[in-house]
Length: 112
Length: 115
Image (tube, rainbow over all chains, first blue to last red; front, side):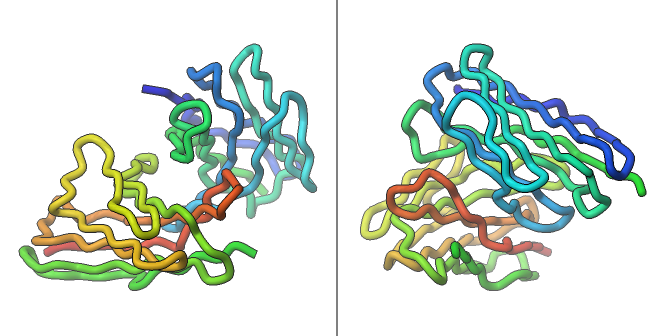
């Protein structure tokens, strides 16, 4: 069973700080990873996806993928209280699969 | 865009009844749709994968006769919870995937409460 592991937190950062969320995965053949944000009582919302080693930036969000070490991270710069949510990391259940396996999520709180 | 809708958003039913949940991709054709269930404070658990015009593929431990899935078109999939019981109470979420893309886009979810 392919797994995606996340530090369940909770993670608390002050407003304006950088929030760092991390995820490790077990399947070395996995090629793509996704970060979703889920507000309490709501469904997940896609924030970013990353396929290649290195960094991918989109606004205040940066996803980082390190295939050699099998980890993927999400950095949120200039954190805002509205970023407070649970962040889910997801990867394919096996290399090339269309199905995703989700981590348990990291709950982030940004304090004003 | 990639908008996915679900209906109803919330349903309360009596034990033993059946409930149908619709999932629609509004602005794209979804070659594959997925059904998830999420219990409080837990992560998403994939129930089944639905492809248009073919039978759904169920994950281990999910009863296909209890959770009936129909994927009648490239924009519509339905999940019917048959003979619902209180332990079926959960947050059911569908997602849809565009042809040629790996990302899944989620519907807003349906909160089912079985009395």
